Image 1 (cartoon, rainbow, N blue to C red):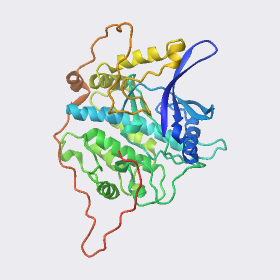
Image 2: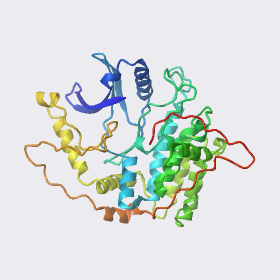
Image 3: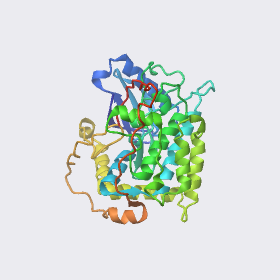
Image 4: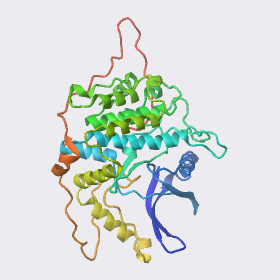
Length: 390
């Protein structure tokens, strides 16, 4: 529902700051429903200040145009990283995947605990935790973004009865069954993301939407050790608890999940600290997307250069940016009067595979969805779900 622009401003000292400016698409700005959703997201984001949540600088209306000025992130989504690994038949290191999930759990717990000006809990639930809403930067940061579907106290544009918000393969059993949700729904969605990161397979995604919904409702979680004998039992114990169908058996809070994930990372033979993991993240992006770091740096330099031309000219970013995902479009050529200075070549996928990714296991057929009929009983009906596809 929005378009993303690059914006810049200068403070009193003359220092420049760049930002991503999110505005409602022109054809939707007269639709009150979209305006309410947009303002609800802005109000939620403006209250948040966490290292693993994309920062919001300000929001408001300018020339009758609603906008949100946000932190500019340069990197790739976790979904794009997962797909690139899949294409190259490599996988993320298990402790690295666990560390990424722990940082997301930190971000979720912060959002879940957030209180309003009156001191009362806002009861925020993200409702859309999935790899496409996780961003990894070239500097090694892990950022959760897109609270556009978040549930919170006081939100004006909450769901109507019979409508479920979120992407089908990352829904929760309670959402499919039209039950009230709480923070444990985000824990389940993060569990799905973690299972997929560590197995390089989809968990609930099926060829048919109805089968996907049935798979989510059944919440059957295959043991990765059947295909990956080296998969740590303690890591699967964490994933399995996060994905418990009965939410009373899940982690009660995302903080509990983060604690166990960090303990798993620390238990490895050569445990890596936060700085090491951040460097590893940047190295993986350089290996999977060679040359992109330099292209984006050049684009930002040109886009932020002073002068009237820079203010009037729109330069499409090389590749994808947060909120402007266009995978079917090739990066446009960058006009330049002279070539950028040479930079050292990024590490090859093979060299990164030695230290940060491992060969992915051969594909195997996904587990069959649970039968929709049982002997002697009338089949259960599947609730009608309207949601965004992954």
